Image (cartoon, rainbow, N blue to C red; front, side, top):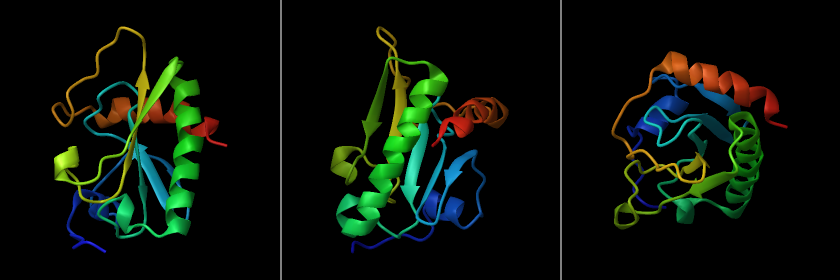
Length: 140
């Protein structure tokens, strides 16, 4: 395993030290609204394991994570009413990873609509909660 920083923002969210707009949680994963979304409905899914990137996950956790990413992506697509969903998963700073805790981005996509800049503008948590309320009941 790489040197995992237990003070990264996602580790703090998992410990309840930082807030998030949660949409799903089970024994292995947590999904929440991205506070700096690139599109309406942008969700992050993280494992509860201490893993800097995908290569640090054991097979069982990687499987649990991707199954939940799929479930949540279906719910996001339905709730937002978008024709496509982009899944992004970056490994290492050279790949653009900025938070070194394994995570997937689920980003709703519409034809002709550009993505917002990553990690640029913070969204209002109240607005994120309204979107989360549409997504939560659709996770099956």
